[in-house]
Image 1 (cartoon, rainbow, N blue to C red):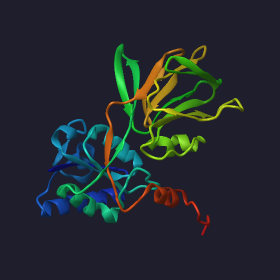
Image 2: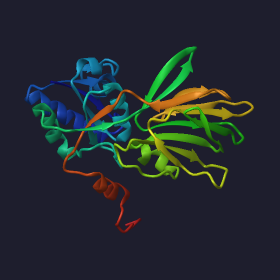
Image 3: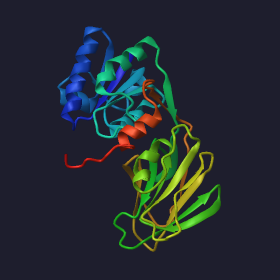
Image 4: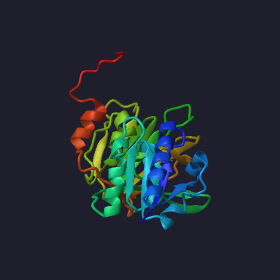
Length: 285
């Protein structure tokens, strides 16, 4: 078995952990390769481009926070991904640094289980070519630098849902419900729920609320404005600046993400520990 290793190179603690895992694998003659930027930062020759890792590797190891795991999972496609939290909240990263070697051994022994996560697929025309953009967390359309409040027109299965005057629209999976959507006032949705949530960003309408829909729905979004450009982001990465009335179609992706599960934790525990539910907030101490 061969591991592809992706590191958050902006965190020194992640680089230290990467050196430890490389030495540990060398001692046990486990095959691995680092993503090119990670290898460069670590001064290692054992490297491959991120686009080539999935073809070369059987499993992935992500050392960082949720952002690193999102980046890794995009290129891992359906290969299992071990997420090790070297960040802050870490809703997606299942394992602590202390649990990393146990997780790797589980994958090597075939004794691991998988959390399968659905993704979004946004269909958009870029440079006169139709492209299919995947997102594990969310697809977001924002007003960007537009000086006024645009109107976002949303249809479900071809029927008008509503026209929202807002700073943007978030379409999130259940996985992404604890990311940008939650910050914008959206609900927390348990993983593996077969739903998406549409959350307006700073709506200028008192009655507008987030709405939870079946993940079988096809969502169409366009921006009604006289001019301007509107950022389309997938998992926080800018993909295109949309023009007024340009139509974006978002649906459930046929490609799922496979995250190696930490059986010693459950989702309720994650929410309690990450969001400090049931604890005193002793700030400044």
